[in-house]
Length: 84
Image (cartoon, rainbow, N blue to C red; front, side):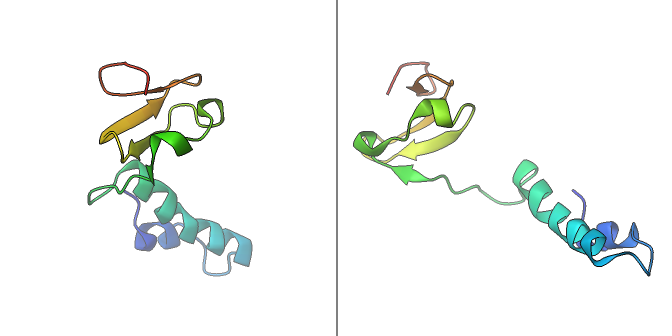
């Protein structure tokens, strides 16, 4: 994972402000790719599932059926591949 110290060391001392802000945001983006702690999923009920076509390759927790669900781009599916 890239740390703030690592990203800020990539910058020249007189780097423009936009470059400094960009370097500081890198940490937040990479933290989602390589978390250091458990990830909390968005909780939703089956009745309130969002449109899976808007969330391809996304995961959430369906609280009333107690399952994680992944959008395949057309349907929300559980770990066994069954539609939720």
